[in-house]
Image 1 (tube, rainbow, N blue to C red):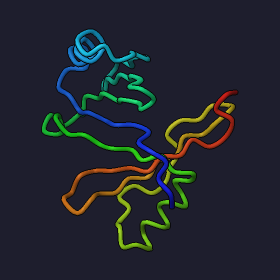
Image 2: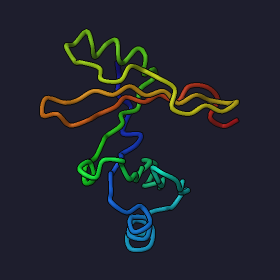
Image 3: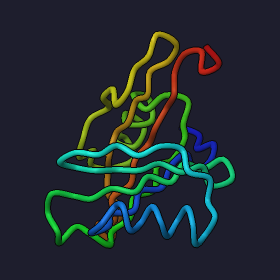
Image 4: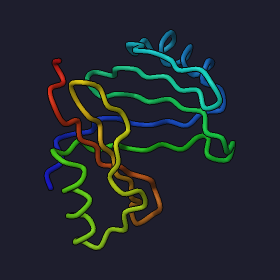
Length: 127
């Protein structure tokens, strides 16, 4: 397994609209899009790293962050991590799929319990 960089960082908040104003208007980070609903979320492009803002169902989860490491294959990375003694909490699965590519993720925790993920975007991203 080789990590190529940080593909995404997730920040859980109590109010997505307020967070969008802060990250977009106050910090000036490039806004990509926002998804309303029961679990609202917003996405930004922070110099090539995706910033994912979400409002969790459980308010106690607000204020937590997740780092998503880019790898060639989330499936292979999960196997490698397991061989290294890491417990995979959420097996590799498809998060998003288009006609051109598939986004895979698998989740695990570091020794202090911080949630981490490996992610791979497989296929032709340019369409």
